[in-house]
Image 1 (cartoon, rainbow, N blue to C red):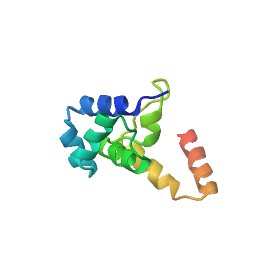
Image 2: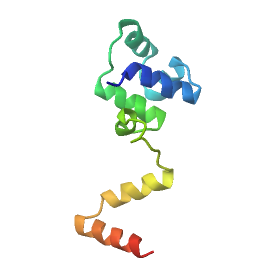
Image 3: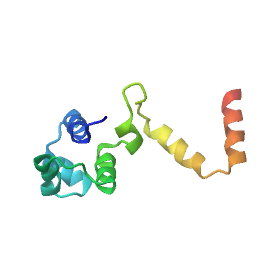
Image 4: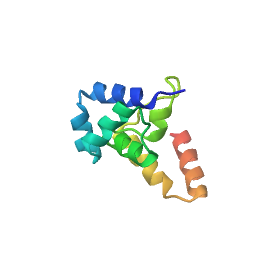
Amino acid sequence: MIDVLERITSYRQKKGWTEYQLAERSGLTQSTISSWYRKNIVPTIPSLEKVCTALGITLSQFFATDEDSFSLTDTQKELLQEAARLTEQQQKSLIDFFRTL
């Protein structure tokens, strides 16, 4: 089972951020974040989404195991966002197009 608070700490430290900096970037208060650790409380999903957004990761990436984890470039994210707007048939056509390249 994933220790959510430990995972937040790990991602935050990889960025070189303090709890205060994470709070600023996530839109949460520092007291909220520090209370998670003091009281050993797992953050709510909406709060965790804010933390993930600040860290530049998705909830899926946050909960992924090491063998499942990977990062997308900004261009890859943009491609996925645009592809999500297509119909299912258009998406299939796009995949076929990529395969022919």
